Amino acid sequence: MDLLKNNFKRGLSRGELQIGLWCSLCSNIAAELVSHSGFDWLVLDTEHSPNEIPDLVQQLQAVATGTASAVVRPAWNDTVLIKRVLDIGAQSVLLPYVQNADEARRAVAATRYPPKGVRGVTGSGRAERYGRIGEYLKRADEELCVLVQVETRTALDAIESIAGVEGVDGVFIGPSDLAASLGHIGEPGHPTVQAALKEAVDRLKKVNKPAGVLTANEDEARRYIDWGYLFVAVGSDIGLMTKNADALAKKFKG
Image (cartoon, rainbow, N blue to C red; front, side, top):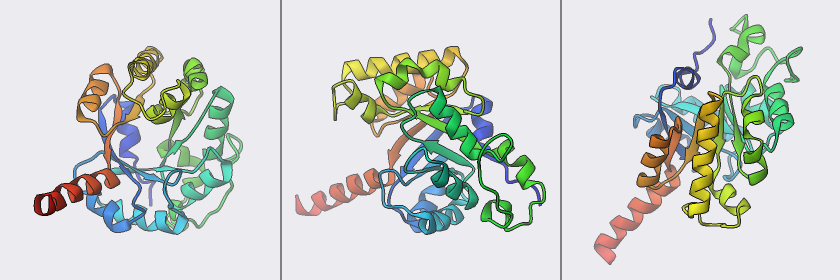
């Protein structure tokens, strides 16, 4: 049995736009539903949603036949948390609040087996098809995708060195945390924040590293794509449910 191909990673490496959706409902049914909507990637979030490992296993199983590749966001850039999501079969990880190149290197090391890194070894996890992929330990990193989040002015100032770390496949700019760092909490659309987002993608293009971002605003999403952002999440499962549920209720109760 061979390694499962990571279509998301391959798309990024070819410079192909990847359109995604944020998933925070912690539901395998909801994840399966949107995995067949035509998106290229889905974030299964654990940083700002009550997702745990058993939940993620079910969600990864649910999206396996959809169009979208799963990207799991651990709650922190932590070796143990990263190890656990990789062992259950996540091939792409989005690691929050990376501030400098050293933290980016630690993130990559957590996804690599020795001697390249510090990932703990098991031979019977879901990632290895329960021991059926004979070359998994030697070849796993071929299909692993490491995305790091730049979310502060400090990190933005170091973005080239972060992006230049070997093994970093893309840099995701977190608009909400960046807005807070720049003194405009709750205002990711503020001109200062938008200028920083433009600065970030321009600098990443110069070092040939894919840039990612999230927005539920269609005009912003199209602007970010025009700027050169390559993996763009254009909404969330919670947002879709809230917006459409409110609209439906208003039709009859408004």
